[in-house]
Length: 101
Image (cartoon, one colour):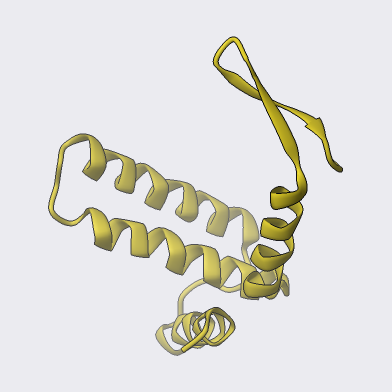
């Protein structure tokens, strides 16, 4: 199953279970909460870190479908854009010196 199919499957599951598919700010809050749970699992060395990362991906896929973005296409576009950028390290930070914004 590719990312686009996963996105549609996540959205359909939300519909099937009666979860939110209209309140976008709420979905961003849920996504933020899942990122926080994943970070907490990482910090504490919990064995469920992989599941927490999966929750982040699932919420992101669902939000992408709600907003009408094909996340696979967006990721591919952004990866290609990032690969063309040139950076230099300045005081431990990577500063973009060439490439679009």
